[in-house]
Amino acid sequence: MPTTTRNTVEEHVYAGVLTEILHEVPYNSAAQFHEYYGTGAVPRRLGMACVWQSFEAGRLVAERAGGEAVFRVGGRHASAVFTEADTLTVLDPYLMHREPLRFDLGHQDAGPTLRVEADAYPVRTRPDGSPAPSKVRATWRRSDGAILLQYLRYSPAKDEDVTYRAFTMRTDSVVPSVPPPAPLVRRLLLHPEQNNFSIRTVHRDDHQVRELVLPFTGRPRQQLVDARHLIVRDNQGRVFRHGTGDFARELELIADAVRGTTEDMVGQLLTAAALYDSKAPAAPALPEYSLEDA
Image (cartoon, rainbow, N blue to C red):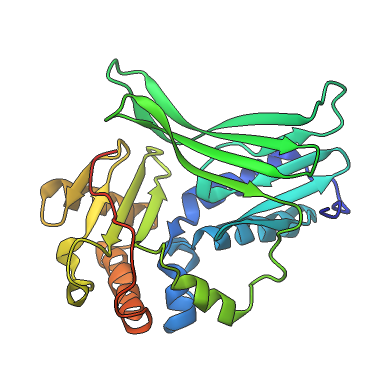
């Protein structure tokens, strides 16, 4: 079981850390390729891979309030989990929940499971103009202490909420050291599930989610490092291809979100793709990356 933190952390500390990472430390699946296969870590404002976003949450809570995180593992993902007396708090910036996920384990009505839910980004728009926030639903299981995380997004194409990610975080599966051993990280970075590089931002002004993506599939391997195959997704999940006005407009806003340039954004993905091309197996069986609108 996770150890209890020595200090009580106010909820506003968790909320502040979460908000800061969502707006200032974007998800960047290429970042650790630069760190472990390239010339070193990228600037914090350009983002981190999902697990490193959780590490950053743990670091900031420890720095600001003495809270001590355990990083539970689910697949190739990890969440920051904090236990204080009868309260368990989860921070997982990759899932873009807008408030900390907090379980009151000592509640008198607590049964075999406890469930909490938080709104998340992106907040999309339904056909009638009403907002459709994403959701993170979290379940704590008393029998084994496991935490089940489900991230749902509204799909305009289907006009319904769909599960986008789901993880089971068990008490006996934790990151043994932060950061993990470099050989392990390098091996995981070449996992066959890796079928794209992307940078996903939540803009500090309009709170819209935008993502620059370099898919690995749909073309010969020798064309992997080619900016013409870049796409962007806007807050509604619409796909815009390189060379279009919509692509250029959304890319400018992605760059503005990290106080960078469009060249920074494109360079992040293309340089990492070149590193991937030099290290990954010649013909990995990659799952196809969807170019359809969400």
